[in-house]
Image 1 (cartoon, rainbow, N blue to C red):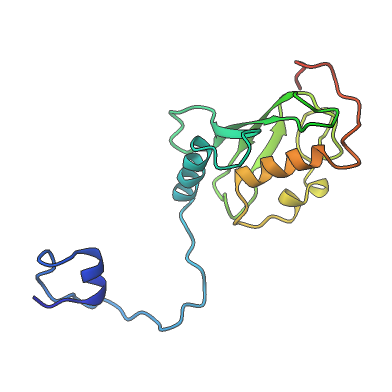
Image 2 (cartoon, one colour; image 1 turned 120 degrees about the horizontal axis):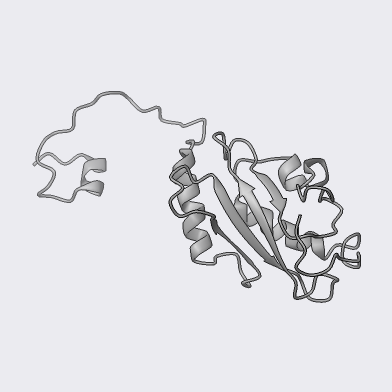
Length: 171
C-alpha cells in the first residue's frame, strides 16, 4: 500500500489503499489564518456555553430557540458580582448574531433593566462606543467574552455603586 503522510494520519492502513490524487499544491507557508464558517463557529460557542466553560458559573448563554437553524438568536444571563449594587441580581440579555458574525459583532441588549454606563437606558442596547469588546470588534471575540466583560464592568468604579432599577423590571 502506498502511504501518503496525510492519508496515514487520517486513515491508518489498511484503509489507505490508493495513491493520493494531487489536485493542487499547498504552499509551504500559509500567510492567512483559515476562516471558520459561521455555523461551525456558533456550534463551538454553543458547546462551550452548554459545558459552562466561562469559569465561576455567573455567566451563561445559549440559543433562545433550539429549532433556530441559523443560530442567530441567543440569550445570556449574568449574575451580578459580589460587593456591588448588582450583587445577587440576575440580568438577562438577548444577543443577535447576524449573517456576518464573527466578522461583525453581534447586537447585544439587556432585557432586564440595569443602570450601567454602556447601556442605553431607553432600550437596553449596549452602546458600542462605550463598550470596547463590541466597539473594537475582533473576530476571535466570543459571546462568552462579551458576557464576562459586561460582568467585569459591573465591578468597575463607574458602575459598582450606581443605583439600580427595581429588581424584576425589564426594558
